[in-house]
Each structure stands twice: as C-alpha cells, then as structure tokens.
Amino acid sequence: MAISSHIPSGTVTADLYFFQPPTDGVTPFQYVDAPPEGQPQRNFGFDTHAVPIHDARGQESSFNLDNDAVGIIQDVPPSAEKDFTDDDSIKANYYPELEELLLQHVPGSTKVVFFDHTIRRAHPDAHRAPVTRVHVDQTATSAAIRVRKHLPADEAERLLAGRYRIVNVWRPLNKNPVESFPLAFARSSTLRDEDVIPIEHRYNNGYTGQTAGIRFNEGQQWWYLSGMTGNERLLLECFDSEALKDGSTVKGGRVAHTAFEDPRTRADAEGRESIEVRALVFGP
Ligand code: OGA
Ligand code: FE
Image (tube, rainbow, N blue to C red; front, side, top):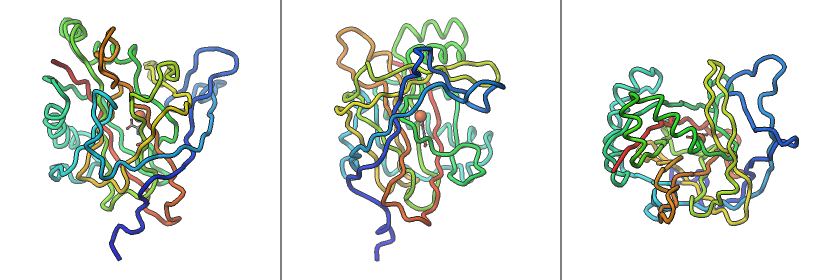
C-alpha cells in the first residue's frame, strides 16, 4: 500500500463558511483576541455553502500570481529552520530563504519586507488553529497602512507610488503530507469585487487593521492542493496595487482562502500544522 493512499485527493465537495453581513448595516468588525467586556467577538454571521473544490495536484503550474493571486512552488530544498517553535530562530533561519524565494517567484519584485508570521497547530491548546472562514487578509486600505507602519516615512511614500503587493508564504509543518484541514483558495479572476467586504480587524493593543469577508457566488472557482508537503509553498497574494489601476490586465491581488474540513479525512488523522509568513513585496 502506498504510504499516501489515505490522503484525500481529487475534487471534493465541502462546506465553506462565507461572509454574512451584520443585519443592522453597521461596519463589520471582529476582535483578534478576547473582546472587551460587553462586546461580541464579531458582529457578522456566516453563510454555509457546499462548494466543489478542485485538486491542483498535477496542475500546479496553471496558477499564476497576476491572474489567480496564487502561486505553487515545488521542490523547495529543506529549510535551515528545523523546529519552528522560536520566533527569533524562524526570523533568522526561515525569513532569508523566503526572501530569496519571493524575489525569484514574484514577477518584477526588487524588495521584500516581512511583517508577521503565524504558526497553526490543530491540537486544542494551540494558540492558533486553522481558519475555517473564507477571507482575504488585507484590503487596499490596510495594505497602505502596513507599508507606512513597517517602513520609514519617506521611503514608504516613495514605495507607495510604485507597485506594492502583500504575499503570504504558506507551508505545512507536518512530517507527513497534509491530511486534515487543507487550505482552499479561489482563483482571483473568478472573484467579483462586490463580494469582497471590508471587516475591521481589532487587536487588543489598539491597532485596527482591515481584512475582507467574502460573499458566496456561483462563479467562484475553488481549489486546494492535495497532500501538500513541507517542500512545497503556496504563495497567497492578498493585495496588488497593480490590479487597482484603470485598464490593468492584472487580476491578482485578492486571494479568497480558507481551511476546510475534508469529509474524506480519517477520524484519527494527524492535525494539520503550518506556518504562514506575511511579506510586503515591492517593485518593479
Ligand atoms: C493565511 C490563512 C489559514 C490556515 O495563511 O492567511 O488564512 O488555516 N491561513 O492556515
Ligand atoms: Fe488568511
């Protein structure tokens, strides 16, 4: 029996949780951690749809950042970072590898600035678990805020006049191919602007960012990469200033994505572990 025979593959229909606007028409918000007293965690709901999710395995190279806001990179050499438990070690060992990877795979890029990473483990006491809500991490507003927050003022203004993107580099940390809670993503060219709704993303330190919730639409084309391994990387492009320009042919820049519960996953499957590193990518 092949070692990976129990790993689900091929097209699957699974429930995805889409954005449902607050009924009272107020600005949608969510707290990242425990909300202040008297406030709900979030003021909007979810709209569940059973959606066909196609398997990108064997079609990896059909994804393109400028069209789909997705890139799949394979055969990445082992990382110098082994444990992925210590933030400083991750920054020292893993970030430089990703800088090289991004400069190589993001067309026209000349500069990379990392601003965040998140490790997810599926066990109950993990700090962050897989996210089963369809979203985009940033909006045009929060992308510009990020540039100003992480770069010196004069450089930020100069860079904001050129092309700037936000790209997450996502990889599993499991020793075995991913069997549970894989990541689904929609080709950006199949997502309508009107289905992308800004949500205030409130941190307890007072910082408020903006993410986007996604309304369901039949035209969205959903994918995942079955049995993803630690020598593969998913590039999730959350923002691209080029896509906003009048007459631009770039359709990338807003990859709707979500973890999903695959109904084919064995009950005793290993929990998915992953790291996503978020980067500002500049140029040309
Ligand atoms: C991300 C993300 C969710 C997950 O990488 O931006 O939303 O479950 N990840 O890994
Ligand atoms: Fe995300």
